Image (cartoon, rainbow, N blue to C red; front, side, top):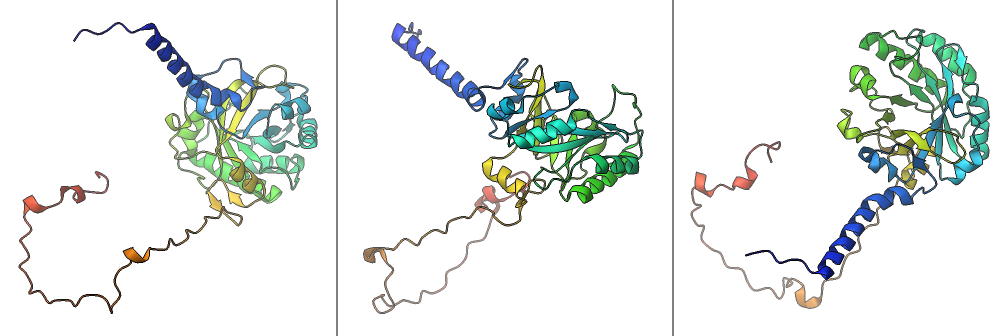
Length: 321
């Protein structure tokens, strides 16, 4: 049958339907934080922009930050660079740390690991400079290959894991909180795959969903762009998303929810018990007094189970089903 030429009315309806569909895809990502932006947005990370809890990570390279404007833009948390290696402290750390707290932004200090320094040297250094504020978020250990720094040395996976374990233990002893691990695609594949899975992971992917870049079944923080634009910060800033919602974020901050293992330690959400629905008298089963007497039926012969009588829906392995 030859196709009919669509009428003008149907064409308009089609345009409206397409516009509505596009709005559903774009609007949730933009409506949450309309004051924030991205100078080079990528469609591969649109899911991160839809997350309710979002934050930033900063260092000296963001210059002097107006934290009041950062807060007003909807920023819920900030990862702030504190220390690096065994002899460097970020010159903007103390100011950023104090200002973020002043304006009610949850903040976490992070240490950038140098593979040219021993783990013990780095533990001593960050214990000296990272505050032990009880209201701070757990600290972060930033582990990646230093391709653009003075320390370009690559150590073995075994040595790297040993150093990381020492520094994670040091951060936890110092702050009393389980540290977060930050890493990128290459380092995770080379070193971290399958390791420290009880710790929260903060992962970087700026052009694709995390599931397409990492051999992991879950994540806690997603660094989804390095070209973010946030009021109060001149130039680019990294933007990040938290995996859960308000309930998980608040419970994690109060120590009631371990986001690394997804285990609750009190304060977990309650599930309301279902109330029994009364059965009308007309539908109730007859009582023993009113039930008709039962009859004994002679046993019948059970038919043989043949290949044709098997239920094919319940055969085969669990994996295939």
